[in-house]
Each structure stands twice: as C-alpha cells, then as structure tokens.
Image (cartoon, rainbow, N blue to C red; front, side, top):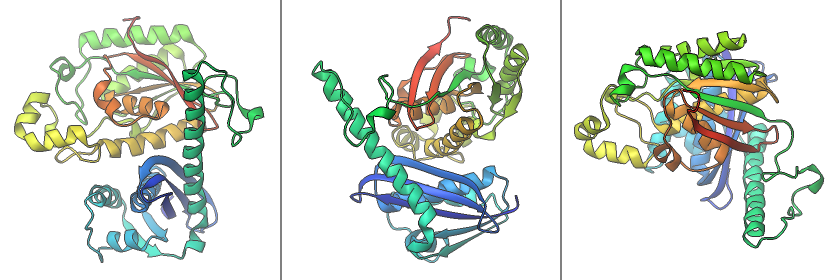
Length: 376
C-alpha cells in the first residue's frame, strides 16, 4: 500500500472535558477503508484530541506500509500548524506536534488539507463513539463502586441494555482475546539495571535458562494460538523458544519494541539523572516528554495501542503470547486497567515474568495476573 488518505478528528465535551479521537485510513480511491482508530483519552481539550487523532491516523498508515499520505481534517489549527503556516503557542500542543512530525518524517510525502466538518463525518463518528464509550464506562464504574460501597446488589444504569451485560464484575461481553504478556530473559544490561531500549544485547546464560523455563510453562498451558514478539533479539530469542515449545506461529511486531531511551541508552538511573537532572525529573513526571534523542511514553502508548487493537482483531477469543519489554507490557496493563501513566513508574516487572490481560470485543478489559515468576 503506497498511497493512503487519512481523515482524523477529535472532540471534547466541555473543552476541557471528556475527550476522544477518531481516525480512518482510506485507500487512494477514498472508498476502501484500510484501518480505523478511536480512543477515549480522558479529560482533554478539543485541540489535544484532534492532534491525538492525527497521530493515530499517521501511525496506522505507517503500520500499513504507506509511503504517501494525504491528511484531511476539519481542524484549521492542526492543518495550519502541521503545514508550518501557524506557530504553535500553547505548550501542551508542542510535544504532540513533534510526535506527529516524527511520524511524518517516516513517509516520502505527507500533505495536509482542511475540509468542512461535513466531509469529515467518518472520523467524527469514531471520535463521538470513543467519547460515548468513555462516558458509558464512567457511568457503569460509578454505579458498581456505589453499589459495592453500600453492600448492595448492583443494578445496571438505564443507559446500558441489561440483557447484554454479563453477570461478572466488569459487565464485558463476549469471549476475550487473552494476552499472556511475557517479559524477555536476562541480559547484561538488565543485570546492571541500565536503560535498555533499542540496543540489542543478547541473553545471558541465566536469561536462556529463564526462557526455557518460561517456554515449558507455556507449553503446559496449551490452547495458545500464536506468539508475537518485539523485533529486538532478547525478546525474539525468548519468543522463538516459546513458539517452538508450543508449536505455533511466531509473528514479529515492531510496535512491541521497547522505548527508545535515546542518549540515556546504557546508562543507569543515577547516571541519566546526573547527566540531565531537570530533564530526567520532568521525564519521570510527564509521559509526553521524550528522552533526549528518544521517544516519550505517550509515543510508546500510541504504537502499543495499535498492536492491542490488531491482536484483538486478528485473534478474537483466542490466547496469544506477547513477548516484549517492560514499557510495552506495562502499557498493555495500563490500557486494560484504564488507569493513568503513574502505573508505569509504580509497577515492578521481573525478568521473564508473566502477566495476563484480557480484552473483550465490546471494549471491556480485565487483568488476571501480574508479575508471576513461580515457574522460574
């Protein structure tokens, strides 16, 4: 797929208020839909949601292998800023615009065109669906929390069709795609607790032993449709052992790559903090700030969310082993729990540990296991 058309939109009910985005990728004929993306993003402004929609559309285009992209949006601000005709004055827009420009740089050509709102109805519908989903989830959570706090039986709000809600805690529908999230085995950098992002250190002898034990554990579980993995060798070696033990296909997904730590690659936490004290402090508190020469946790979330959607679509109701790294695994848990970025800093994951997250076809999710190492 060499040429695509992206239409994106975002909205906020309150500005700022509950916000969501939608993006659709068309083939060059502007008829065939190649990909759709939508997400409720919590409380944000219209402009933030619009930029998030653009980023999602560009990321989906990259995943499809597009080289030429025509972006059509009804946001004059985003179109003019991305075209370089308007300056970006609001601080919250700067990292989003930089993230979008980084994606743009990966294509041969990208053009931006403003269109009337009526011509952006597909993306607008997706954005509104995302906001509706967010508000509905909040209503259900509030009802469940209030009911359990009072010790009462929980009734479903009228906005939800009670006949379509399962009797479980979450009310999620259908059979979920279960992701068995396996962190790779030990490397020399992990022994020394150094930032290990896009570097490619091999597994240590202990790492290979961890991998074999994890593979044996997974083989005993059975009923696994596939193994997917980050392309980095430490993850790929782990995934190859699992796929061989399970006798299932192995698929490499670039979106599962670890965070690009840029200039901090190979440094310890203390060394990075000493090298860039203010930036390091800011980075720890703001997921939109990238490591120097690297990427932000917000950027990681965008690509990991794309992987999650694809896996749910490719393996509906099936079990899939996902071999990756600390940040992508934590991000998948974050998405399943519906919590903020503080989880990235507070959750510990051991080497070769297993977590389990389930994603339902109706958008529901649950976490069943975190940081299991009992088989090691």
